[in-house]
Image (cartoon, rainbow, N blue to C red; front, top):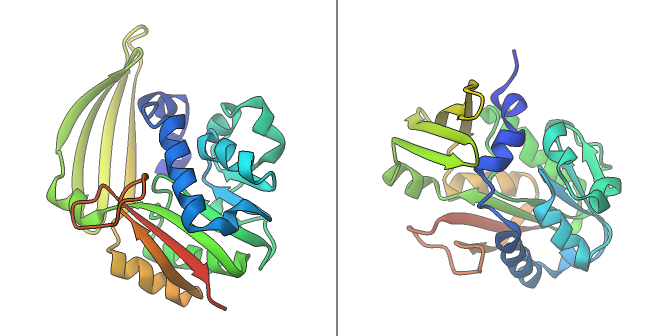
Length: 241
């Protein structure tokens, strides 16, 4: 059976999330570099890099930064200059040596796709790939805010695509089901997203087990401190041992 994340990240996804643009990525990366200067040198992995909007900016500072994603479609949309620095692989099976990385970045909520067991195993694996004092940047949603302010339905139009979305909290997961209609052709398709909702405490507990300690938490890409109504939970961890 094909998982939702194997079927969804394609040209329609890129179009619907096109408002997540280079300027947003530039602000986020520049702030992360201030808090985690380790990202400026040595091998750094932009994990689930998509079309490479953060990777392109990181590479302006650190030419040893590379990206990895499962989506062939999104990788194919990356700028041509990034192609030699892109890998296609499943994050649950990282083709990277233990202790080899100075940093790992996970931008725009690529954590929580899997079962609890797999998510916890992933965190352990991420910790193992970092060298001592390497850093992990985890850009995750504010689960409490999402739960309190959930918008059950909306309709978004981008280009010739109309997306009718329904959102729900199902157990401990945020589930978004979408019907996409290509207005020019009339073609329709169903897609979904399903993210495990973790509290900050749960994320930190997983990180500690992976040998990571929390350095800083940000609530926005521009670097504001996290609070209960922050749109993001951006944890910056360092490898403790």
